[in-house]
Length: 280
Image (cartoon, rainbow, N blue to C red; front, top):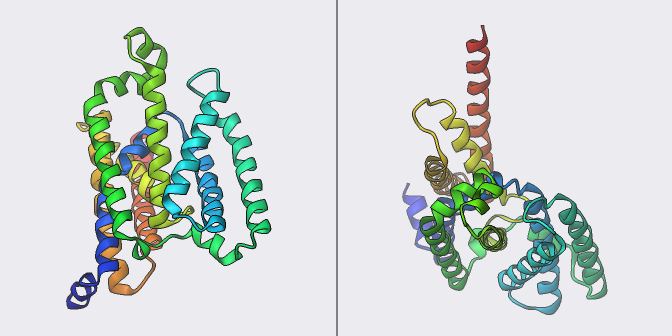
């Protein structure tokens, strides 16, 4: 325990701890949006946008997170222009994914960016964060919380059915665009923490764990409960995984993803046997 506290006295470790705890407690809100709006294809497209933005940042010697955020926002707006409706990202995202990887490959080849630097984008590290990065994480988390709190009543019908939301007079296009842009920004920031491969341990896995846990109960239901439970799971495993990684000298991103994944597996097995038992 003394060893962990001594490590927290180091500025890079403390910054990483703050960023992971805040993002773990807040970024699952975006995960709920991703799953409720069926935006998994968009999530993978944004991961490719992270690699493209990273390649541009490395080639031009610009700050990583701002460049990736701009690229992801641009890709989202480009896809929204391609679509005739506010749903169905799968077709457009496939094309953008291929285009992003092709551009990243060409840029890194022409500018002679070392392959190891490009691969570092896939794995991230909370210990590499600057004070500005931590402030960005906290600011984005606050924006995310405020949006959900102020627009919860508009989000509920949108999650249920877009046509119903339109009939209720809700500006579906506006809220859909805002949520997609928030997801794009969260993915860009989470990449710096955990890398492109393990972003889902902050976004999607806490929501899946919360959903699996809530299915074991009969009284806890609804999107509001899912929002709260997802944030609680994200907070517990991001902070817990971080301290476990310090105690056992393991990579924080992989530790958080592993612990959350194991918890989800246990819940899935319990739900499976419970369902089998009820069928007998």
